[in-house]
Image (cartoon, rainbow, N blue to C red; front, side, top):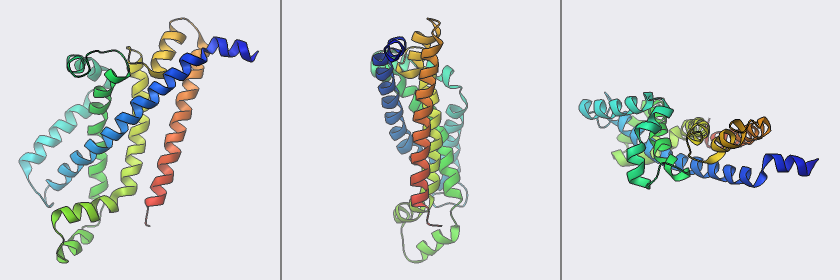
Length: 222
C-alpha cells in the first residue's frame, strides 16, 4: 500500500520540487526584504514633512513602485523574459524565476514598509533629534527598531505571496512544486500528485506563518 502510494506520488521528484520551491522562496525573500526596506525608507523619508522631503524623488520612486506592484505576476514573468535570458541565460529553471519573483514582490513589500514607518510616533523622532541624533542614527536606532514587528509581519505576508508566485512560475517551466503539480499531476491526469503538491505547499505556508508570528511577537515591545 505504502510502496504503491510512494510510486504514484514519485517521492524523489516531489522532494526535488520541494527543494526548488524553498530555494526560490528563500532567495526571493532575502532580496525582497533588503530592496523593500530601501525603497520603503526612500518613500517615507522623501515624503512631505519627513527628514529628506523631496517631492520629485518621492514621485519617481512612488511611480516605479506603483507600476511594478500593479502588473499581474504572470504577465510580469512574460515581460521579463528578455531581461531574464540576459541575466540568467535561460527562462527555464528555478534561477530563471528569481528576477520576476523579486521584481514582483519588492515594490509590494516597500509599500508595507512605508506604512509601518508612518505608524511610528513622530514624537519619538523629534525627541531623538533634540538629543542630537543625525538622520542615519534615527534610521538605525529609531525607525527600524520601532517598526520591526510590522516589518516582520509584512515580510511574512510577502513570503506567503511569494510561495504562490513560485507555483505560478512553475506552470511555465520555472521548476518547484507548481511545475511538479502541473507536469506530473494535471498534464498526466494524476490528481493524487496535484493533491500532494498542494499539501506540501500548505505545510510550507503554515511554517512560514508560524515563524513570522513568533518573531513578530518576540520583537514587539508593547
